Amino acid sequence: MLKGKKILVGITGGIAAYKIPLLVRLLRKAGAEVKVVMTPAAKDFVTPLTLSTLTGHPVWSDFFNPADGSWHSHVELGLWADLFVIAPVTATTLGKMHHGIADNLLLATYLSARCPVMLAPAMDLDMYKHPSTTNNIKALEQYGNIIIAPGSGELASGLCGEGRMEEPENIFQRIKDFLAFDKMFEGKKVLITAGPTYEPIDPVRFIGNHSSGRMGIEIAKVFANRGAKVTLVLGPTQLSVNHPSIELLPVTTAVEMFEACMALSQTSDIMVMSAAVADYRPLKPSDKKIKKQDENLSLELVKNPDILKTLGRNKKSGQMLVGFALETDNAVENARIKLTTKGADLIVLNSLADEGAGFGHNTNKVSLITAEATEHLPLMPKSEVAAHIADKINRMLLQLQ
Ligand code: PMT
Image 1 (cartoon, protein in one colour):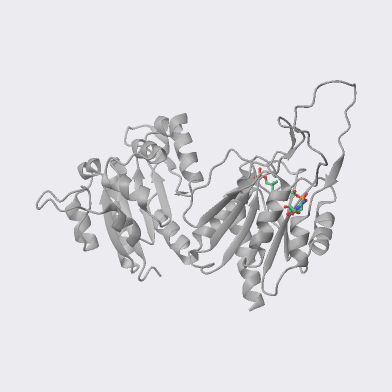
Image 2 (tube, rainbow, N blue to C red):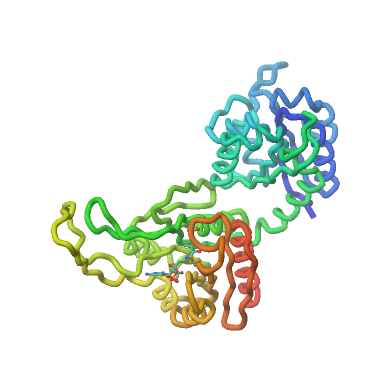
């Protein structure tokens, strides 16, 4: 199943490093080619000799070969790999990765890698719970890394709790699952909108909404991780995106989002409109701050262009158009109306009536609505919702063939 796959295993200095030879063995038995890069501290926990014997390759750890002074290229390792799996990742390495510190070969390789990166953190429970660690993990996830969350159990300190590296067999399974999908959308160009739009009232005020952009960003990451070239047209958000296969086009207003989408629509194979676009904008935004005067203030609003509907009207054969519907009542009925009036192939419905769904949360509860069927999914992390949407689109594309 992993025949011909090139997997770079990174090991940092935590006690769980002693389990990595088993992971390497599983990967090799499944047909993968494996190379290992380790931090100097990792050598205290597992020997390079063990790993070079299991991989059939030298183990990389230093920038220079002390024997002849030759240079070990971190760029080369990062370019070679189809997947870079770093396990275990210590709290120190997570912090350095988050802040771009490249003071060993493993970190320099991470910073220059173009392939997807999986991280399996491992540390003591209090270190794992510390806000510095949780923030580092959150940031690294936003940069597009795939986190294999640690489990609960007995820790090297003798304490019991969260922080134990996921078992090698489970990491191996995650790698297999990921690589089974990784080329699903190869050669496909995917256009995604995400986040809110801000419609200026004056230089200091705007009409906006609560969208964080997370749902669309997760969808962009799933497509990019599965081989697509993604363009993400993103409204104003606090979240950041950094993925080699995602081109980011930041926009502010609905009109800017519309223009960006129109420019890309003809060359896109799949279009997913998850942005919360303002339906109306102030007709004449003031160029000076509006002063408080009368009891009432009226703003004249004009309709914004409907991006989804315009794309639906001009859809080419073979193109896949996905819209979202954010409803508060009569959800399925309204979403079905959107499916037909907007000319979409699939509507992803989320309802503000469901707890944990919609704006801001890390979770969402959606229904996938096509002309033929409605599929209700349970509440789950937005990253998993994104994977379900990508799977659904893949099944629909296969049916078109
Ligand atoms: O960003 P998060 O905090 O993660 O939250 C995610 C989300 C709740 C924003 C997302 O899941 C979602 O529901 N996005 C669509 C929100 C919305 O505006 O729904 P709507 O029912 O008003 O619009 C229907 C569809 O038309 C959407 O695909 C929308 O992008 C599109 N639209 C709407 C207006 C407009 N002028 N142009 C459009 O293309």
